[in-house]
Amino acid sequence: MRILFTGLSGLTGSHLAKLLLKNGLSETDQYFCIVRSALSSYISLPSRVLCKNNFFYGDCEDEIFCTSVIKTVQPDLVVHLAQMKLLPVILKSTISLGIKPRIVVLGTTAVYSSFMSCSQPYKIAENFLTTNWDNFLVIRSSMIYGHPIDKNMNKLFRYVKRRFPIPIPNDGKALYQPIFYKDLAEIIYSLLFKQQLKGYYDLPGPDTVSLKAIIRLISSKLKMKPITFSIPIKPALYTMQLLEIIASKSRMSLPINSEQILRSSEDKICDSSLKSILPSYQLTSIDQGLEIQKTKMNID
Image 1 (spheres, rainbow, N blue to C red):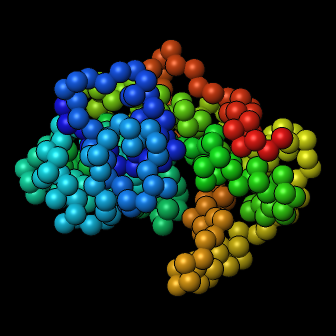
Image 2: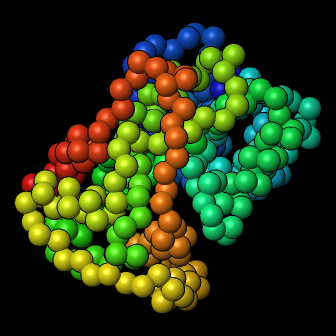
């Protein structure tokens, strides 16, 4: 089997690569990976070992590039772990070549957002997939956390530890269901070769917690009192949108984006499909996951 990955160097993808390496590789399987850059910082060690020299450097937004990759690889399975909204480009490339591999996708529960600007790109991608494909599996995950390179809890740990003031939109009332990255990777690994499993499955974490509660948990683990202040949604959103315009011109890095601020005014919760696909799997609790993350970050 010829397997093409996108996003394999990310947090979930790197652990998935570890699982594939740990549990033995079939001599008949070949692994290929699309990455944005040849720089070593873009390619995790597990994905480098798994795919050996089978890397393609380019942008998944570039249909000409994707078509060239698909034509070269002729994949039997495409595992798309990069942004869901990039999926239509991959699909258009395979369609243009008359190739119909099985597609396994890491999606997002952001598709349920009540804000059109947040959910629309994911709805468009899912609709394109549903309309043009039969053999696909989409795992919609909630917010992913648990490692120093995650883009969510990592910032909160750093801010609490360094006693940076933490702005809390909507008084931190919005509810989350964070999922531990290893759980997500293990579930994807368990389902990767189950050809009979098709369709969309939601995979939020096991605990429903508010942003305030998450900050309290992190603070208790660090034994430090956080500095927080509440900010109204609209002024925060307008300010962030302005900063994003400035950042796009100056290549400035921002700690959060306007979508995160907008979605902080709504609950991000949904029912889980886990029992229907892996009934015996036990997810890591938010308390356990944050404890593991604290240890990995070595910030005691």
